[in-house]
Length: 346
Ligand SMILES: O=C(O)CCC(=O)C(=O)O
Ligand SMILES: [Fe+2]
Image (tube, rainbow, N blue to C red; front, top):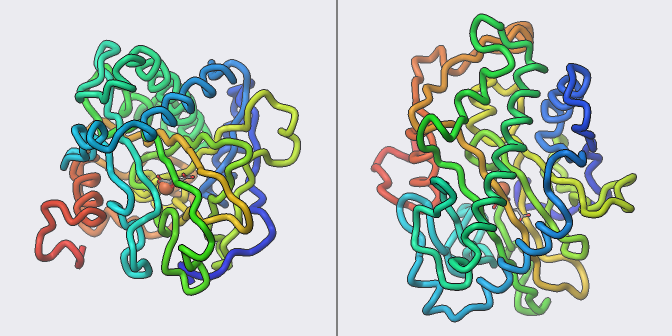
């Protein structure tokens, strides 16, 4: 069913206000991601403003509009950083004949406000703004990670509320966290064939890391999630009650690493991006993929809630892996980089 048709009813993803970052909010948040794998968050003190978002989207647009030769100079590398051209990525290889109808630029971590990669001239001019945006994203992720730990009732002697955030602290070492701009051009209907699902903007997949933030533009839909009953549901951009907000709430989803770490309590959900029905415009989205520090061992989380759930822990089957090892394995599977002969089996 991972390539089935879309339902017309939008997904009922909860919207949570983070202004009061208390135990009740933490509980709501954990419940939402345990059920849907996705949640919308809002709250003024997050430091994002409509202006910052508009400027960042404008920068993304300018980058994608720049000459191919310029973008190619920073082509994607095995470290997952750089520009991936149209169709270069195939997120659902079993069901796609052509690669995703998208291009993307992955920007790695900033160190003291400086990008650790050569930025194309369009982006280089705004390095400070990009660095600031990436800091705001990470700050929000740290806040969410604290709330997850609070909601999961992690043993205070084992790190308590700081259990996840301390393992994502950029001052303690590098991680695979990525700021990603995405561009999905509008395609004429007869040039793509969604009916037999040959072409898709982003194939069905789940994200790899701890959590992802996603920023969308009000008139550019396309994201869908696979619901537990195997139905594809469109994700609204401005869910009910947020229409009057200065900008749409930020969409958060759980990645596979966090799913594995919490033994499936915080759930990663399969999603995809489709061509909307009727007239469409280009879609621009911005994702922030938050990963633990490379060296972090993904050990069983000392949480009362996870224990109470009583599901068999996958890590008891002798699996020990670092965050870096986990990410490398997933990237090899997506891009065929450094693929080992046995990669498909594990
Ligand atoms: O553009 C979007 O809405 C989703 C992007 C996405 O799912 C991804 O890059 O992992
Ligand atoms: Fe994704």
